[in-house]
Image (tube, rainbow, N blue to C red; front, side):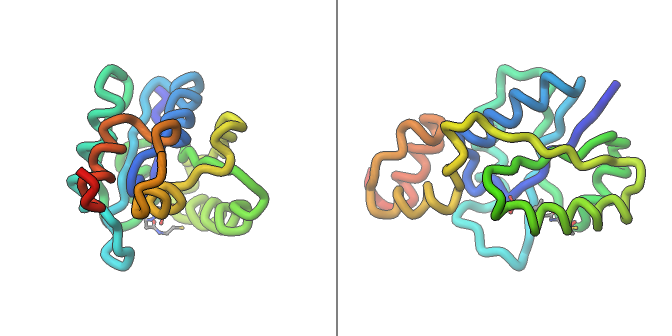
Length: 160
Ligand code: PNS
């Protein structure tokens, strides 16, 4: 049983994340979507809200598990005996940070390999931060996020 962990902030989940989940499922038996509850970051949505949105989005995927975690990603992958950490890379600018994190995680969790996946090119310019920026000014985000995420963003910014 090959288990991979797909960690991130998911604030909120986008179609780009979903695309990566589908790609991850082609390579691994189970995928653990691990939502970081990092007290240093100020997310728009609470950990619980982010988890609900991811769960609603992947509810038909029985090989996907969703959890909130705090602490080290390396501890989580060791505990879950995951063979891989999945990260998405969209542009060269993602690379430096990802490279640093992958090598540090390799040091902390030597049995887990970081695997970089590219989303479909139609999502290469997508990020949760951009989506929030557009939603904040009531811009159209229909093609970037699942319908329920769009609703939650509209509510959060007072447009419904
Ligand atoms: O979606 P993001 O914000 O790019 O995800 C970053 C995340 C959550 C994967 C990273 O910050 C993380 O792994 N946090 C957990 C704490 C940790 O293990 N830090 C050391 C990483 S080498």
